[in-house]
Image 1 (cartoon, rainbow, N blue to C red):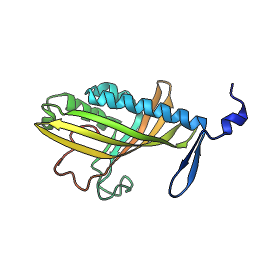
Image 2 (spheres, helix red, strand yellow):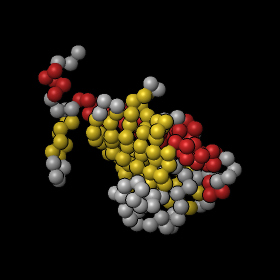
Image 3 (cartoon, rainbow, N blue to C red):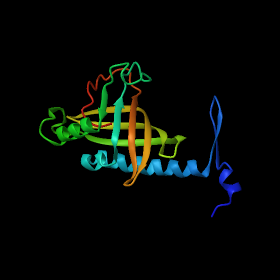
Length: 185
């Protein structure tokens, strides 16, 4: 058992332009859990194991990609590129794994890098985290790169850690030459 004095002692001091935060041992543990979750999730998506990926989502999950020119717009105040709940994600996966998704026939090959995982707020139910990503997409002799940041809300359920909300903020000025997002970022 760790003495209380050691639990309260910061294990890491993070300096930013605007403030200095201290990360506790609990924050470091949560960051490792978030990293492990996100690395596993990336492997599932890169392996096109979409049903297994969906199992990592909470029943009330929301998966959102805001407009490129309004990345901080609240849902309902701007036209999001993607604003899916659980039912819509299930439908999207059925389409992607079936023959109906012509844009993904043949399916894209992807490679994801997830970095700079940082824990935000912590509640009794779960925690928020932020990370950066780069997704390379290969299809029809073309390579597209999607770069941005994720904003995650994790919850603890009986099944384990699950993703309740994912906001994908793309650092692109336009979807061109990409033109579409027909796969899961």
